[in-house]
Image 1 (cartoon, one colour):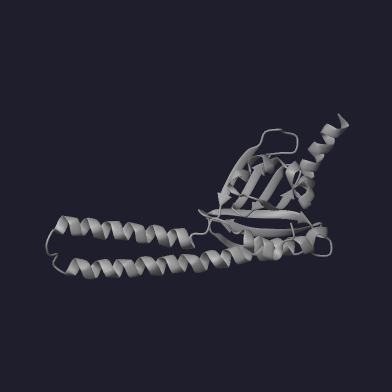
Image 2 (tube, helix red, strand yellow):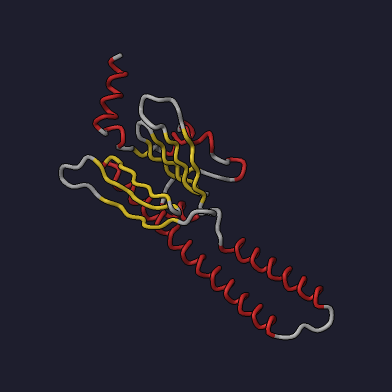
Amino acid sequence: MANFFGKMAADTLGISDIGIIIEPKDFDKVDGDDYIMHEDGERIYFVIKSKSDEYVFTNFGVMHVDGANAISKKRVVRRYDFYHYRVTNVTLETAGTVDLDIEIKFALGEHNFSIDVDKKELEKLKDLYKALHEVSLLQTKNNLIVEDGLNSLRLANEVISRNQLEGKAVETIAEVADYNFNWIQKLRATYNVKDFGTVYEKYINA
């Protein structure tokens, strides 16, 4: 009973919201490990765990295991894959003299995250900050390349549309449409990156 009320007090005081960084040797013990796509080459590189939440950072994206509160066993698992969500607004807020925690903030698409971490973990959290920042830079760069490629394709199609089609128009249009489709697919396959493992390996020893 004492343990039960202790957990309730931790929730009320907000202590449970201060996360710790899990060591790589213990990655297989976190709840999020059960939902990793090991069969597809997904790998955990960083885990922040509080009393009720886990934030699992993998080469494919970020997973949030939401426990709602410290005394509930109910879990909600949400995935944010880099292939579908861009990382933006990465910031790291260090602790003041009386602060107990530091804070890392970032957005994945329209979803904003603000994670409090024990201030003793600052050096490790700096590595995560650098990794997320580089993912953001690479995604921005690749997105611009895709946009430039699509604009080039659009201009080429406009030139074709202004010229009279000769011969079998239907076949010609079908060939152009097929070419456009293949071009776009190749462009996205090359620059809409799914796996950012090399970025994590550059900054994080896991």
